[in-house]
Length: 118
Image (cartoon, rainbow, N blue to C red):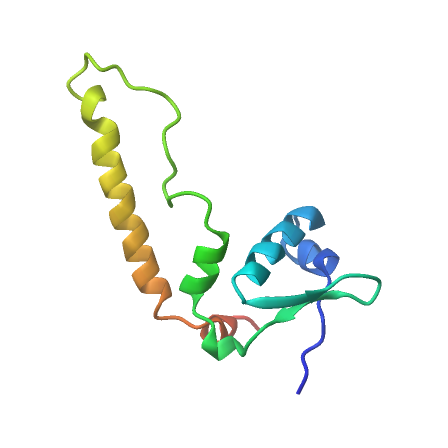
């Protein structure tokens, strides 16, 4: 059974964001082999493979832009005993959190996640 194409406008309306942002993420998902898309009046996107063979970890890695907890943009005071070490310690913590999230997402398929919705 061939799945229908879903437009970026429809997806954007569902999650209440700009369709341009949806198209950007669809591009990332397409580059990672998770969706196929077609441009034009009758265009849209659809999964490139069955939802039960897509892990949420794959989706996360396709759209991930930074660690879960983000990265500090300021430079701490090198004279401060906490400031001069904080980024190293935070980076280690961020990596641990990101790895724990990935391990959890590797246990859930897109099909399993979709079952949570009515």
